[in-house]
Amino acid sequence: MYCDGNTLMHMSPLGPRVSFDIQPHDGTPIYRQVVEQVQRLVASGRLAPGAEMPSVRTVAEAHAVNPMTVSKAYSLLEAQGLLSRRRGIGMVVAEGVTPAARPAERLALLQPALDAAAREARQLGIDPTAALDAFERALCQDISKAAL
Amino acid sequence: MTYAIEARQLTLDRRADSWSAARTRALDGIDLHVPEGAVVGLVGRNGAGKTTLLRTLLGLVTPTRGQSRLLGAPSLDLPDAVRERLGYAAQTPDLFRRLTGLSHLEEMAAVYAHVSLKVAATLAARLDLSLGKRADELSLGDQQKLSLVLALANDPDVLLLDEPMASLDPLSRRDVLRALFGLRERPEPRTVLISSHLLADLERIVSHVLFLREGRVQLFIGWDELLEHLRRVSCPQRPPALSPGQLHWSAHDGGQLLVDTRLVPAPGGACLDMTDVMELLNT
Image (cartoon, rainbow over the protein chains, first blue to last red):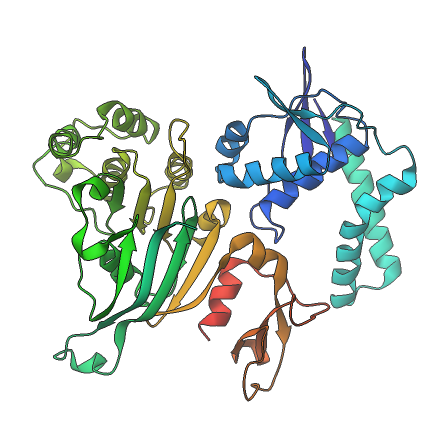
């Protein structure tokens, strides 16, 4: 098992299986959390074309959330061309989807989180150097956690 | 667009002999259109009218004015074909003291065609509830679970729940949240109207939220829409009148304005959770 940001990936004989990290109370709609986590996993190449997504029911049961919300996320990802519906299997990562090759593309996905953190740091009156230090520490902690 | 639950100008005057509330209304001109498949959280302070609204929608209370419909049928004249598709769990479990859970189910099955003992038994097992005990032998939490099992036993298309989880432990609450979406695949998603003070639970499951205050609908909005577009901004002075996009001014915390950022840009406006919105709307 390894960790990408906050989405757990379990290795199984059929390839990686995704389980989402859903935080119902962090101010981001649940469907958007799912969309963004899939976008990140695809951009990083950890989810390759053909990889199966867990069923709507599985995700809804696991997190005690509304299945319609999960379904909405999958439909949006399908509309974006990242997922496709395969008969008998459910949602899979669409053929032809390639990881974001350039670091700049992956950074673009990180930008909203950075903007939010920058705004909160300013509101809290934290000076930029201290904020940068804190981000560096968070990165190190995350990497060591992921290595476990 | 078909609506599972509708209300037009639903109004209920309090009894004239209730001197302390002589000038108030339990329900005051409620307009509501709940689309099929919506899961609506009914949120408001004690006495806001949540229970009265649910009971009026079910036809258990006759409104002074206005009307409501469930699955297209008038609340005050629900045909059996519609009744069979409804589920309701009252705030105080409405049980026969001397009957076991199973007897309750058998009584229901004798009257309603769609009651499935199998569905009910599966659900009871998931909630860790014994159906063999008499209602008066059950703890309050277990009575509440039984009341939910009964409300769900006919796999209803419309489910009205009044504080269904108030006496349940956190694990049982999680199981109840899961059970609301059915133990088996449904061709059409169930419409649910659920009142609760456990807002963190509601945040997991609702598609819409209805904020009620003093018998009036203050805000009825998609939950994702609220999270994405409504923000709180500081505003020390009460605006003389709210302009479009300004939803509510609260004196709380030095003056706060609830705004819809699609109409009123609010850079740096704070994101909100359900408790924040409830606090803003009630102060």
